[in-house]
Image 1 (cartoon, rainbow, N blue to C red):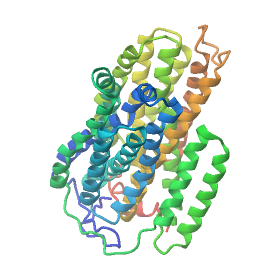
Image 2: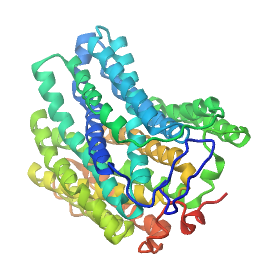
Image 3: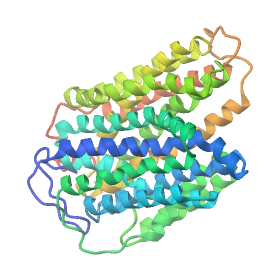
Image 4: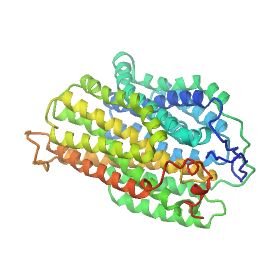
Length: 486
């Protein structure tokens, strides 16, 4: 993390020279990162549209071919924290090069695949490489931007994600309708074009001086995550295995000489509560792109192409206003942006709950409020959490944040799907006046309540901090160091 003091922090991890201000080429680096995030997001969601065709070609069920998406999310989540850990030991230039080359290699294997097994292998390798992207998206704003400009940098990452979310379904539909679905694997190869730019703009760092990597701890954490995500769709009994693996992981990190994650990171109360808020944010907000297509299809009976068009305005608004949210965080503080975002989300979900059965165009308008609110809230939470970490904890700490986000989305997607399958015969919203769509109205009402809870919890954890004190915003400044338990 960037420090206001012009000293060099030397540990057993990679040696980072904190800067007093924004680093040279930082804006160019963020534009490259925006492009990479767009490709990464597109890669993550494009195959969802292709699953029916893949199922038909290989004579497999949808649940079987859905592993192309499920495995990607699972490996992506585990990989994010692993790359974050590696970023504390090795240079960003090295891990970015490795990750993007692996991302491209998996894409080539998938592009040449003739069997489902080979396509799945390519997809898993894609995820193993692409997981470096969310890790560096959290780390680069901290290492390359002065504290008073980090909000704008995080806003640029939100823009990249929004562009990917908007373009993914459209590009996937065009590819599937004109050429074979395997050409979806070709899109990620575009990252090779920016790899030389990463190597050019990332500054030179001194690699770590040795030490062992806690592979056992990493494997136990990966097992806990995998079992937890699978328990949502495969049975709650797997959750017991997840708890066992988590317990073994906690034992391991308390006994290992160089644990995968230092236990003192979890004794940082603000950091731990920040992870909890981020979990709630991502679990709540992923409903906007998971439930909305189902709402348009099941209640409004729109064809797939029109569903895509209805989703574009909200994604475009998030891209347009993403940088504005970051600049607001820098100018008025994270709390101001978080409260504004929570207000937009509460309004969005209440309107969706009340007018679920109304015009699709009206629904598309409500989604704009929600997507912009999500973008703002992710910026505020990420920025706030980053300020609870010491310099040597940035990589693994922000990697954990990225991992928590993916776990929340994976669990929430499973719960939303189960809720829609169960349905509802009445509305909990007394203002709802339509004859169908009860389950979507009810879910939106619950989510409005969750958005309000996020608002309250953020105020309790971060809202009382005087964010105008820019000295305390800097990593390693006295105000930051005091917030970390050792």
